[in-house]
Image 1: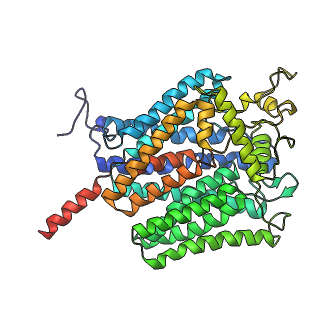
Image 2: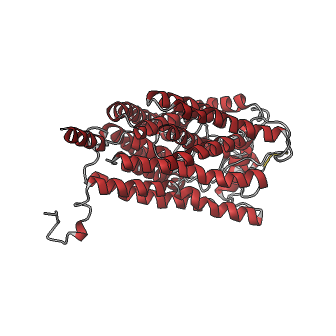
Image 3: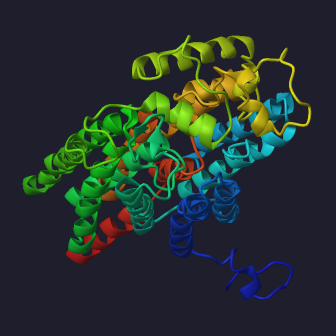
Amino acid sequence: MAKTLFKSSEKSNFILNMTEEKYSKLASRGLAAAMIMAPLFTLAPEIYASEVQSKASYAFTAGGLVCGGVIAMILAIIGIIKKYISKWNIFPVCAMAAMVLWGVASLVNGVVLNISFYGYPERGEGLLAIIFYFCFFTSAASLKRETAIKTVIDGIVGVGILNSVISLIQVFTGKLSHYTNALEDKINAASGLATSPLFLAMVLTLSLTAALIGFMTFESKTRRTVFVCSSLLFSFVMMFTYSLIGFCGLATAVIISEIAALKLKAPKKRLVCLPASIAAAGAAIALVFCGVIGNISSYRLYDGRILWWCDSYMRASASGNYDSEWVDIDNTLDVYSYLNSRTLDIIGKNALVGTGPEQLAFALINLNADVDPNMSIEEFMSDEVNKGTFDKVYNEYLYTAATRGIPSLIALVFTLIGVAVIGVKAVRRRNTAEAFTVFSVVIAGMLIFLIGCSSVTFAPVFWTVAGAACANVEEVKAKKNEKKTSSK
């Protein structure tokens, strides 16, 4: 007999009567849709900026995160009510919950409470975003079926495809982009719908890892065809981010995918996708050397110009322009070393609660400058008096400690360690392509966090796959029982 509350109808108590299979089907499809919301909503500002040749508000992107986050929040509540979070994965869920709770202390300490909660106007990663990421993680951790994990993997590849299609338009036409020029060089950099080429490279690292392993290990011919074509597309586009993250992401995806294929004993002929992906990346670089793209005829990294001048200063107005006296903007190692060094200084001064979510630049601003009190926050941050400030450090672990305190960093590390440990157990217990894939993707994400930072387009994908990696999937046991029964 179906359960009801307070003698209400069975239909109104659908959550109580929802089976594990129905929840997993609903949640996996909901998460796949939620992951793609922020990129989809980014189309509006990109099209507007391209048509009127002016700045556009990325509040639409934040709105996409809200829509996806609300879906994830509903799914997370259902998962918790149904007690799908168990002893198996309670540790990482509680660790991430602690990170969210400590974010409240960081929020109160922030200079501008509105930014602490909602995030900087062109970034959108305040405490509210972190709460949504927790919901993505918890919803995915509540999944109970292998088919649901497969749907999540399809969603990850789908996010990559959407971003890559837009990227091709940006690379070959220069439209729908804020990254056509990097100072005097016309490079037509790809940012997709990730708002930055560096964020795009991070997203494609996850999508490429999923596509490569999926092609080598999945049985469906249709899925394998989509995955191999996608992997070539992702590798090609990643090179047009002109970033260290793009190269490291490609290498990480290829190495992890090869290890996964060997562990799962994938057919050797399917390993051809690995050199093919490297060849696709080489073809992209060759096009640049041929003078086909922009006004450049040689390939090099533009990390400094992209992250500081194009994104933080020009697009987001979240920081001042770079200061050539302190950093060589064309020296990638110098740029990252400078950002890391200054951030460590900030951590030393704000170790407990940080600067406040999304307020790293506020610890660097010139407090003694004589400025117009009627300036907007964007005008003030990009004013000449704040030259040399930056709002992002491309190391998520340092960025978390700097903006939300060392306790938040500890909670983040415990969350990821918990995911990794449970992911290993899940791989050993289930020994399926799906388990290997999500575990491999989340490891790729953890590594890329060393040279990248969170964004509203990357984080939903990462935290969804992190949750999926530690989900207590039970379908495999049922299949084994069925085989035993049939053999008898």
